[in-house]
Image (tube, rainbow, N blue to C red; front, side, top):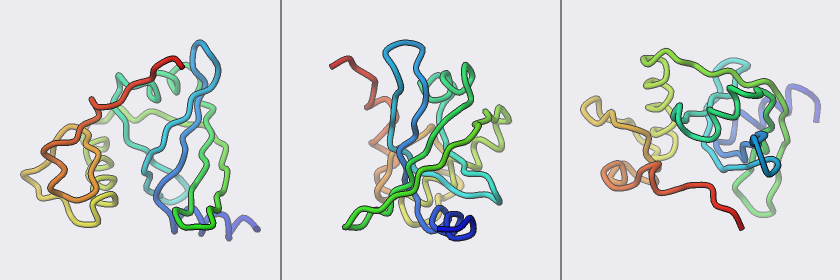
Length: 136
């Protein structure tokens, strides 16, 4: 794949494995949805989550962009992450990610804390609070 084909692959997909360095116990990975904005790949997370804390310590990250179809194909991307602290931009990114996940627009009155959604009705019941990192 040349550079334009790699960028097209990333633009055409929506999920990736987000890899980052933890303070202890080696690297961590988590599945996330992302959106592409120009040359940037944007991931939404809360400031208190492991991804944000890790990026604040060391911005070097990797993404394994997933095709989501069988046979599974993927593309690894390495780069430097940046944290956005502007609340309006963060809320707009969260809305874009939720719309991508649910496949429909988020009504203005439904702007909420981060949610995992498969359809818009999930926005009331599924939250980020359902996951954590645990030792094996």
